[in-house]
Figure 1 (cartoon, helix red, strand yellow):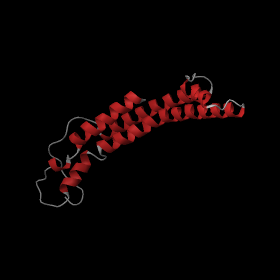
Figure 2 (tube, helix red, strand yellow; figure 1 turned 120 degrees about the horizontal axis):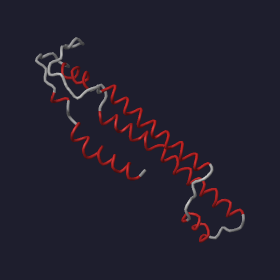
Figure 3 (tube, helix red, strand yellow; figure 1 turned 180 degrees about the horizontal axis):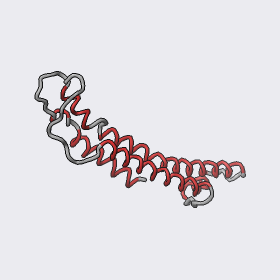
Figure 4 (cartoon, one colour; figure 1 turned 180 degrees about the vertical axis):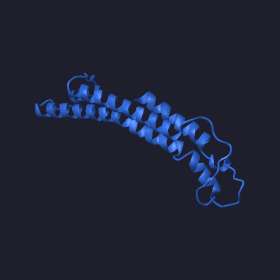
Length: 149
């Protein structure tokens, strides 16, 4: 989770905002009709790249966070059981935090389901990008038939 998350955050914050930050100003219309630039920009880019990537980052990262919450919940239950058994000294409770959690039982299923959902989210976003931006070629002249052109 951390490597993917940090890499995507860096790309999103550093590169994406500077590259795709102000594309609308580059669109030029040969008419003085107000709003022509906006209509033309919306035709080529129906959704902002940066916003769509942000949504993708949130949805792809959420399943891994659920696994982390599951591990924290298991550790909390283990600490609670130790306290009920009379082993409530702070050193013993800190040992619960430090020992490795074995991936078995419900944690294994939580992990597998999270990986499946991450793959589904990635595939869904790839499909959405394919539908929204089908090619690399941008037509130089667009006949505008929408208001206010």
